[in-house]
Each structure stands twice: as structure tokens, then as C-alpha cells.
Image 1 (tube, rainbow, N blue to C red):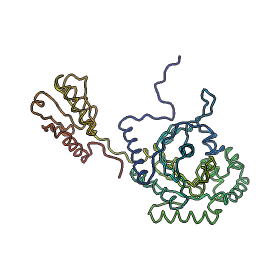
Image 2: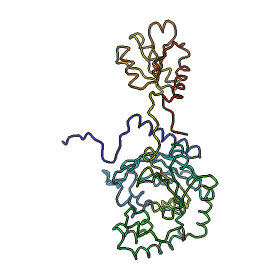
Image 3: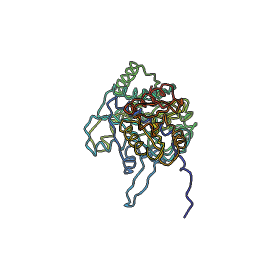
Image 4: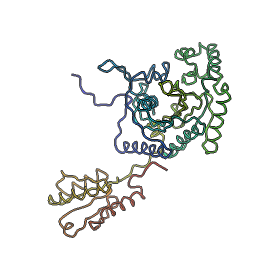
Length: 431
């Protein structure tokens, strides 16, 4: 039997305190913001039938051809760890007959076999929203604005929004033909992948990061100049609403996103601090995907944001000296019972509380409290029990005072508040 490897798989990460807590805070910030816009949580399986992603992302997409973690289960079924969230959400909405229009959000891991680099991992966190059944340009603008508001709440000051329109079923064929003709004339300058894309999906050439392909596509015809009057009017209203909302943006004619299901509005959030891989996430309108999954014709729009890249880009707050944790210290074994009752009472009141049952000496219990970064210790001894008080020690300042037993909850909360105002216990990442 081979020796157990003592390291994590390539392209994955461990999160230990306080980074794990910071990651959870970012997820909680996103949940709260999404819910204020009327979105409700959806939780889908970590793996789906492979056909779900092939049908939605496109057989020629990089996700399908190069990046999916696909496998057969013991019954021979083709399954895939989800590389993105939208297809599973659409499948779940149809299978569970969710009433539309509906607004849904999700937070969870995704998996892609790609070359690990800064902000790009094989297992990564994704934050997403999907607005199904809403067709108007004002919804597009609101969705784009929501993503910008999220990054703003994390303190990411250099986040920039890029937007584009890639047209609809009616106007895209004309652009496809013009782009295909242009690329065929420059076929020798393109990488092997882009040569295949000329026939299968020439729009994907705009996504290629190979420098020779970027140069060849520099003067290529772009979708926005081929859109029909309806798509043009839709996009103009999106931009007008973003202007009214005061969200800065750039129109990027080459922003097509890397998935087959997008139409009309596409958008992306970028940050220069990430380097070459500057995308924080993005999304677009997908008015045909529900119908392609066998459902009714349903307009829809959504986005997916990278949790890992958000964490990399957001300014790191200084590590707090103390947590909102109370540590109950007992002097003799006779006080263990009362210590347990106090801990249960504080927990019932919503205060995180811990006891060290193994340290037989008070000094050892205080060391445990310090290792746990507790904000305070509550000492119970024979004298305290007789007097009906507790000794409350502020571990940030060393101050210790007696508190009436019936006031302990209020006094602990007050101590947390005082430490929080001085940056000694964690706050939130929200602005």
C-alpha cells in the first residue's frame, strides 16, 4: 500500500483561522446583499450528469474540452463535478418545477482542471445569482450594479466593470459569417485551438490569451456593430441605467465570455491588482438556455463571482487580537458543574463560550483562553458562588472586576462591544 501523502492536491487550498473565518465572512456578505435584492438561496449537487454541462457550456468550450472533472460511477453513469453554477440551477428549477419568475443565489465550490496560478485553483469558490423570467434591460443593469456593490462592500477600490452586447439569434449569424471570413484570411497566425474555433464557434477567438491570436483578432469585426435594432435599444437602456446608478463602466467590444449560452448583455468585473488573470467574475443574459433544457421560453440573466479572487483582492484587515468568545474558568472541581451551567446559559443567549476541562490548574485554563484568542474569562470559585457574582476579566486590557450573576450576559456583550470599537475583536467585511 502506498504511503499516505501529507500534502493537499495540486490546485487546492487549506483555510485555517483566521483565513477560514474571513472566507466565511465574504460568503455571508454576499448572501445578505443578494437577499436585499430579493434573491433566495438554492443548493444544487456538487456533481451532475455530464450532459448537463456539455449541453449548456458548449461542446467546443474550454470547460468541456479541457477542464471538466468527469468520471463514471459504479453503474456506468457519466458524471462531472460542477465547473460552474448556472447549468445546475437551471436543471434544478425545471426538475423541481420552481415557479418563475424567480431570483436565486448560490455559494459553493466548483472544479476545473486548469493550470493553477494566482487566484486560479482547481477547486474554487463561486458566488452566483440567477434571475429567471426577467427580460428587461433594467434587470440587466441592476444585476451588474449588484456585483459592483458586492466588490465595493469588500473595499476593492480598483474594481472596474466592462460591458458589451453580443446580439441575439437573429443578428448573430451575420457577425459570425463576417468574423469567420476575417479569421480564415489569418488562419496561419492562429493557435491550433483557434483554428478549430473558426468553424465551431469563431466568437471564442476573442477569449484566447495567446498573443499571436490577440494580434490577429485586433481588427476583427465585433458583435456590437452587427446587432439588430432591438438588441441595440436593449443595450442602450442598460448603459443609460448604469449611468443613472452612477456605476463606472467601460464598453469592451471584445467581451464575449467563454460560454455558448450567452446572448445580448455580457459583463465582467476586473481588477488590475490580480495581474494577467484580472477577472473577478462576470456574467450575462442567457435567454435560450431554459428552453434548450426542455423548459418554456424563458429570459434569464446572472453572474458568477470568484470567491478566491475576491479574497485576494480585498484589503486584508489586521488580524484581531481577540474573538467574541467567553472562556469560563473554574477554580476547583466543585465549580465544574456551575461552570457548565453558566456556559450553557451564555450559549443559549447567543454568546460563544468555551471551557477547558483538562487543565486542572487556573493558570493552564488562562493559557487555553489566550490560545483560543478569547475576549474574556469568567472566573467561578467558591467565593463567587457564595456572593452570587462572577469575576469578569478583560483579556485585552487585563482589567478584572466582579459582576452580579444575573448581569453577566449584558456585561459580556458590553465588553465585546468595547473591544470591537478598538479593533480587538473581529468586525465584518461590510462597509
